[in-house]
Length: 133
Image (cartoon, rainbow, N blue to C red):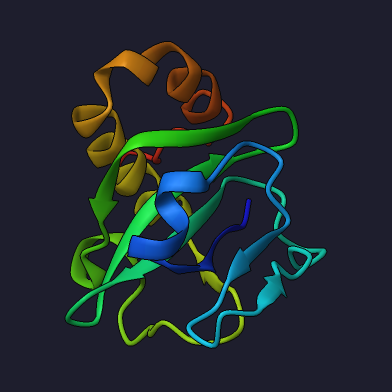
C-alpha cells in the first residue's frame, strides 16, 4: 500500500478556509492554484500539508477512498518519524510507507481527539506492521 503527502499551500492563508472537497489553494502570489491529482499508485492514505512560517510543514487533511477529513488542529510533520530516510518535501507528492503513515496518523489522533472515530476508520485500512523475527 502506498501513501503520500501533498502540498496544499501556505498555512496562514489557506488553513482557516480549508474544507473537505477542496481542489485548490491561494498561493503567495495571490492567485488560485489547483491541487494536483494524486498519483495513480497511491492507494492508501493521502495527507495534505501546508507550509508554516520558518519552513515548517504541517498535516492539515487526511483522505482515503471514502473519507476527506480536515483537521481541527494541524500536526507538524517530523521528517525523521513521518517520512522515509532521505525524503524531502517538494513540488511532487512525497510517497511514504505504511510505518510512516501509521506514525503520522497516531500523532494526528493525539492532536485531534474529536476526530478519533473518523481517523480510526482510515487507520483501519493500513496493514498492521509485521512482527520482527
